Every structure is written in structure tokens, then in C-alpha cells.
Length: 427
Image 1 (cartoon, rainbow, N blue to C red):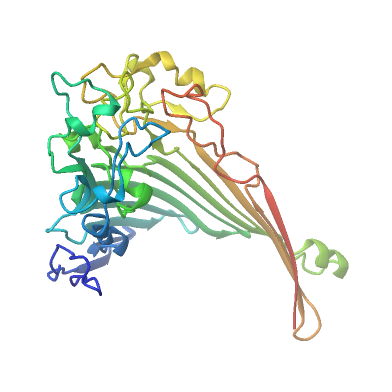
Image 2 (cartoon, rainbow, N blue to C red):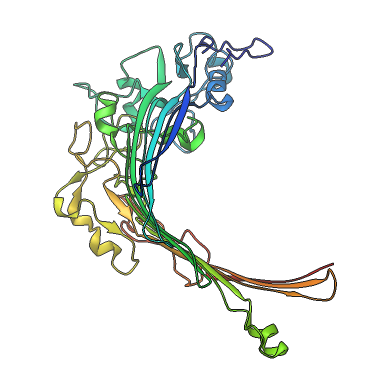
């Protein structure tokens, strides 16, 4: 990646050209002797990009932009008497610090598989896929308020307790995260037997990272994705399951064509013969979520000027639970199992992404028939259904301990069952 340059020279992008990126790729396939099957493997290095929305945040720092933080503001005078005349060179403001050593994220990706026939009509496939991803983007929230003897630990004193007197919040954009993914797969394929085609696949996988994954741009809500509870020991605090981690996954696919009915009466053959029915069913774990305090204020969080504080767990037996039923969610995630952190504590003892929302199950189906009419004319009927069994995919429960509705599931992530019908004439 070449070094970006702001066209009007109003801001300087601090990192140089990332010009030494080489992305080798190789693969192989080998047929084993006899009926041993075929083995395949591949390896490659893949590079991402440094997004414009990431590095362009340099414009949000002085002198082009001044970010002001007022702790515990008076709603009648939220700026506390601050005027535009007070803002200028030397004014204490928050800054975006884009690393001068920012590099393009990259990933080592590799896979291996073995396939062999189990008889004439069945195939077995065993596979592995993995990746190690480096230099993922991460935002570190620095210059947070400390515990200072003699100064009350309140939101009103946050700016007074920041160690750097020249700045307020310091947001450092850097290559601060890594990610690890490994997955094994077993697949059985029945290509076609008496009009039926089937395949079934099961995956067992794990994905962990140091707070941010490959989707983060460090802009908007992405910036808070990898936010640690305190300024120090970021990686130890954030290492955990990735936001998309789903260790168990099952996929079933089927296709069936009804017989043509041969020499039977034309009207019967036209109505009942040559219908195609297919379906896809998936079942997998829900994605993980964390339990947070929901407030940075005294008695709830560490009062350092940043949110994302997790809580202390009092009942370890709740760890790892899947919370997916609105009728039982609050009993499976009871408020009594947690406590807000103690005064002057930096962080809660609960890890990141230690719970899961409910499983994901979905069935899509299709019914189709084509009638050949005279000459080049044909008529096709097609019926499709999304979420055929009308299975709800529930959102994660309210994860803020400070909320009266903590543990309650109040939303779904998918639509209800839908049908679509199509009649198409071709000529």
C-alpha cells in the first residue's frame, strides 16, 4: 500500500508506504494409490487494506478539530462556561494518534483435505482449515483517569485525574490485535441415487482474538469493539472468543426429483411427474457476548472516563451458558451471579465473551416444476420458503447489569417464515 496523502495538505498521514507486501500462494492435489482417495492442500498469504475511514481520523485532532470532554455536566450550562474564544493553540483536547508504524493486516491461511469414495454412490470428505492473522487494527483508549489520593473518584474529576495534563482522551490507532482460527470438517456426499442427492457437513471450530477481528475499521462502533476495561494489560484483558465464534455447525442439503411416470396417462404425468424438491437446513451455536456493568460511574465502573467495564462474577457455575429462550433467560443469567467492581478496582474479573446467545437453526425449501409446451415454449412454477419452520433467532439478552431488564431477551434477529411463488413463461 502506498502512503496516502491528503489532497489539500491540511493533515499529515503519519505512516509511510507499506511497500514490501508479498503474497505467495501454493496448492497441491495427489491421488493416493488404489482406493486411497485424493488429498489436497493449500497455503497462502492474504493482505487486507488500511481503510480511508481509519487513517482519515487524523483530521479529528487539533488544530483542525478540538474534542472537549466535560465530566458530570450541568444540563443548564453543559459546557461549563467554555466559549469558542477559549479554544485554540494550547487548549487541552482529545486527540486521535494514528501510529507512525501502521501496516496492512495480513493472514496466513492454510487447508488440507482428504476425499475418498465409500462404495459407488457415497463420498467421504475430511478437511481442516486454519489461519493466523496479524497486525489487525485496534484502538487503545489512553490517558484515562487514575485513582489519585486526595481527589474524589467521581465523573466530575475525570479530566483532573488524567496523567497527561496536555491532552484529554488519547485514542491510539495501531496494529494491536491478532486472531487465530482452526476448524475441522466432516462431509458425506451422496451425489445422486434414485433421484435423491444429499450431503451433510459438520464443522468443529474455534476462533479467538485479542479484542479486534478482521472486520474492524476503527471507525464508529468498530472503535469500541476492542475496548479494554483499563489502560494497562490490554491483551490479557481482551483475549477471548471472537465475535463470530460458533464452534459447532451442521449443514444438511437435499435434492429430490419425482419420477417421470413413464408411459402413464399424459395428464397424470404432467401433474405429478418431474417435480423437484430441495432444502437446506443449518444448525449452529449462537455467537458470544459479554456481561458489562453498563456505567462508568462510581459504584458501577472504574470511573476512568471510558465505558466497557465488565463485572465481577460471584457464581462461576453460570459461565459459558447459552442464553436463547426469553422465558428462561433471566433465570439462566441471574443478577445475583454478578456484582459491580469494588471502588478503586481497575477491572472486573469476568472475561470477555464468556456467554453465548441461543442456537441458530434455519430451514429453506424449494419446490419447482417445468412443463415443456409446444416448440420452444415452456412454463415454470417455483415456490420458495425462507425460514420454513418459522424458527426465531433471538438476539442476545440485555447484558448491562445496571439495567432493570438485565438478562431479558427483547428482540429477534430474523424475519418470520416467508413464501415466494413464481410462474414464468419462456418462449
